[in-house]
Image (tube, one colour):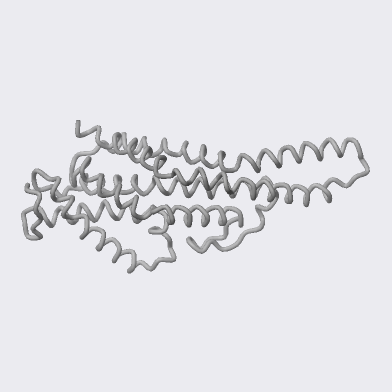
Length: 262
């Protein structure tokens, strides 16, 4: 097909539907877009606008009218989920780090309402999540994801065959990135609290009349919060290079999905 776009050309409607399916996969899982505080009608409007803007680029990559089969719709949804998952993993890693730090410091019971998902979560987990989302938005999170979505049509045109098994396996493997980043963010606080507990244990053996339960709790929280405040700049520096991590993850999953086309 030619690079020009005609809304009434053969295959245009099928391209629109498949493109909308891929975009909906991104919106269903990507940070901010998937927030429950955004009304459904607004998300539907975002879906339609993005699809209309991307349809000409998607149509230009086709060599024949795509077939509207269940397999094609499933493949498009999985590709969209993979694109949104790359960014969601980075945000979830920061949230997991906050939850882990809260448990280590003894603040796991201090839960407040998450404004993005309206759920009760530990306060440090919510802070690290909102901090990460705000930082990534300042680093063009939305435009990078939309750029990756547009580029995906060059590699995998609408309706092209995908290897669902390989793609899903690659998406599951991304879970290791979540734990790796989460532990990396929480490592300073975990180390500081571990050393504090070790010191308090030695102090308890040396002064057995000391009530460790009363003394260790505020000391552990204070040192943990101090270590957390010291670790935030390092966490921010790591997140400034998020586009490299994101592109690496979606390229890995995209190559797995494209295995069927080779």
